[in-house]
Length: 195
Image 1 (tube, rainbow, N blue to C red):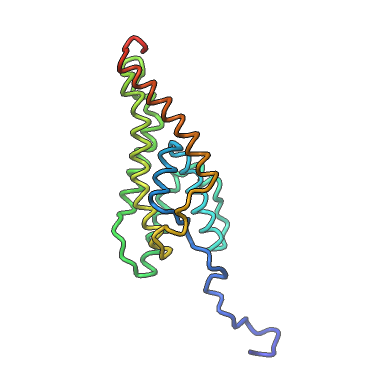
Image 2: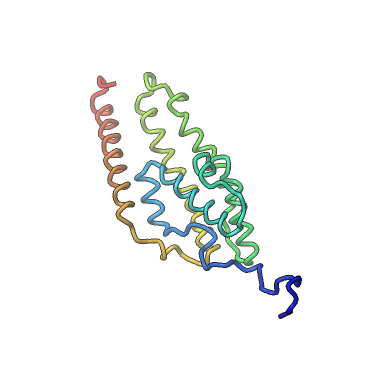
């Protein structure tokens, strides 16, 4: 160590200061449960946590909140970041990030505007089932990304596999909503005059 106060620091500043993961680790089963039972509202939190951890790791001026609410505009960049992290670690992971991100964005947009594309008056059953299908498809399109994120963090997701009280609360509220929608859809099938 130099005694000069003008000498540059000799500490290794290239390594992260903490042992926190770069991405949000979640067990695949927990990810599916929370995504489906909250009608993908969980995605806002999921994207927020990933961008927040990236911001901390990179010490940059990324804004996690807008990136989480407008996640369709930032899906590709998050997936590219995960792919770059896997490549830097020389980990082989077959998940096609560009294709998955594009499909995820398309299905999300179509699912959100399906009530305008499919008029309820003409196709009530299809109009009711389209958002439900979109929820399932987008969840399973993000699942490979979650697995890639876990791999990039050197995990399988087991460190975040336990369901918390908040998780249960959101899943119960979403489950009630699912039951109401499915009961209403079933009633339309059984008695078409309800349309």
